[in-house]
Image (cartoon, rainbow over all chains, first blue to last red; front, side):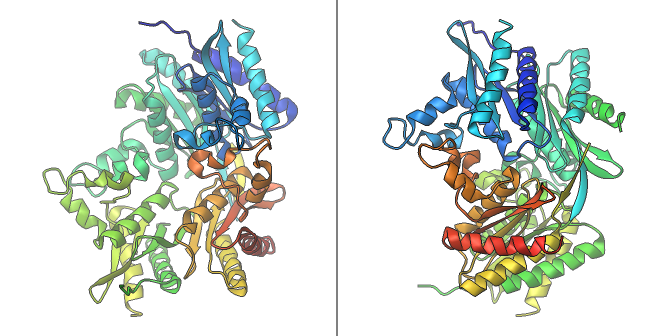
Length: 140
Length: 140
Length: 140
Length: 140
């Protein structure tokens, strides 16, 4: 048997609140998803004005980051033409996201969940995801 | 052009809070989804202990209720063997939910969104969805 | 080689117009889909107030009727518990519709297309689909 | 609650008519889709000779443009190898279209819907989509 540590709904609320605050600060309404260590959705919010298309993208960024224990932008680098992971973007029915905005939550070297953000530029999405990540790590 | 009214994220928070409170009261951790008038996801929460399989079910109950402007348990009645809507349960790739727990939010005769709840018995899911619905209607 | 006869876009317009008129007459805004003999979509309309969930259902009813050369309500009868086609409703990823509202367009014993209607009761859907069918048959 | 404005079926007819006229003018039968502000399909036509494969592509271009409030060719630029949105093309099960031919309908800074066109070259698709867009904007 294994005992794992994972985000709970309270952690997700902390992350959503911080991410929303950062999104408000930069003036971009976002879709924000929180997944647990298993890649399963814990919480989601589409801020008023967030893109409808970004709901699935945010969820899949968080799924990718938590499931693969890796930031989605790292896959972006690794999947460029000629690189080893080229073509990975369409894996899992397109759920494997290689665009920035998905971050794993690592605690003591273990992945306990992830956050995915979408609706802005990848740089904006990454900034908002980082704010959510920082907030939960500050509580550990 | 048409002008429509729909739930915003603040409304969704009101609904989630009330649904969560009812779920705590009856002692069943739930997956709770809120969609807008177009059936698109606005917010989602899986309470600690909520069923992983119920995430999609809650989202699809809310999608069905808001998209079809009808409670999911009404489809349950209408789709029994020998009834006119028999077989509808597998429509839209299985997203059309006929199990109780999905309720439309009707304001002035218009559907402005929906709520979907899953993890308990259908009766428990319906009770928790109703609590979310009542809470937002009390603010109108 | 085979030469086939199929609905063209002009036929689809005739059918949509007649179906819309009937929907207006009975006061139920509908989703209406027209497919050709291959089951492929030729035209679609969601009337103002038609159900979002019914878009896919209308398209799949027409797909089923034209692809199988059979009215969807005939599948409804044949797929009841204990009947030979029991379980067919979830075939093709749920696209095989067994609820009334899908009709094939038969000309000289050949299927040249179909019409699918959804948003009302199955009886209303069938009535509106029949109006579309009658209109195109009157032009042959 | 939020109040939003969206395309109705009459607007969609205006757009289809203008797009069809342009398609006839350039001699390329097209698939043309109109979606509302939520990305949901309002109307669709496959002109006689339009490509069967282009039906889904036209619908998904319109879904992308209206859901993301952005022209699909802008995603084409942003998703080239080495660019920040590289890999986005396979998102949402491949529904996120980055090929030109999808345009949002923006009225007073708000996205009220979209148009998607497919069967020609991307340049031809864009030209036909633009004709549909211009026609509806002229009525506002």
